[in-house]
Structures are given as C-alpha cells and as structure tokens.
Length: 150
Image (tube, rainbow, N blue to C red; front, side, top):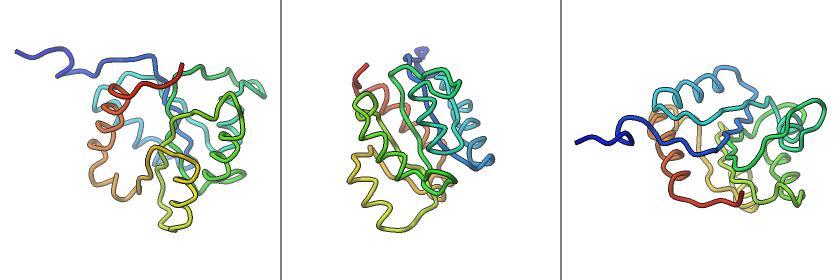
C-alpha cells in the first residue's frame, strides 16, 4: 500500500532561499523541486546583497521567516557566496542559517572557506546536474530528518 509520502513530499513550513545569479541554473533548481513534488516555497535572490536584504527585511523586501534553508552559489556579482555566508555568520539573528553551497567553483580554497563557515554541504553544479533529482531528494530528506532552530 502506498502512503501519501511515497507519492508526494510532506510539506514542512520551510522556505528555500536560492541565492543564484544565473537564470538557467535557478530555473533548473525550481524545475527539479517541482518534479520531486516538493511544495516548499522557493524564493530567489540574485546575489548575496539581495539575499541579506530578504533575510533582514530591508530595502522593501518582506523578511523571510524561519525556518529556511539556503542554496548558495559562489560566483555572483556585488557579493559572492563566501562573502555572503561570512556576513550571515556575523549576524546574531541569522548565524544559525542552514546553508548548502551549489557552485561551479572548483577552487579548493572556496570549499575550505565554505566549510570553515559551517555550511552543511558543498555541491558542484556539474555533479548535481547529472543527478539533480537525487540532489533535490537528498535536500528534502535532510530537511525531514534534521531539526533546525525556529
């Protein structure tokens, strides 16, 4: 017998903030979440500056309430992903944010910097591209199992 969970993901009140400047990559993430039937809200920021404004409710952006998970690219204009995570970790209200880096950067220093900032994972876009639905399922399962501060 099939349970509803077998056919459609259970929705928890989680918002996914996708911090990604590339339109094609952003659409691919959104499409994959729809294919896996994950119903959580996905909000996109085009760089770290806009993401911080959204998380803080600044410059006309409605504040994103916790709980949320962030998928963050590294190579972006104005404020790159590493700079964004550094700023996030300095902010007492945001420092516990759950972050996965999703990037094309193969620079070892980027990976080390990200993990030094306590990200939950560092995922290469090209690796994710081959098995993107598996990646989305992994993120969904992670969210269902792990408890995060509200």
